[in-house]
Length: 67
Image 1 (tube, helix red, strand yellow):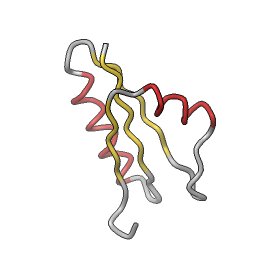
Image 2 (cartoon, helix red, strand yellow):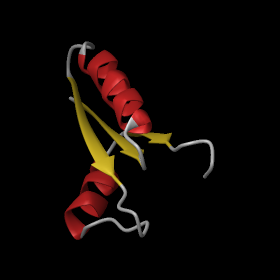
Image 3 (cartoon, one colour):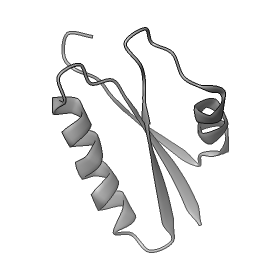
């Protein structure tokens, strides 16, 4: 199984919608597990989120243009 993590920040929800669309497309590939990881307003991740990133085979990053 291929593990993919999508890491994103979304202040107003637009980038979250894009991350969810990428997730849907990636999950359509057989044998792929995709996790969404939202960065909080302070730029922090939980220990559990860091573990997901460490175990991922691939990473996708998303952020609004002002970042």
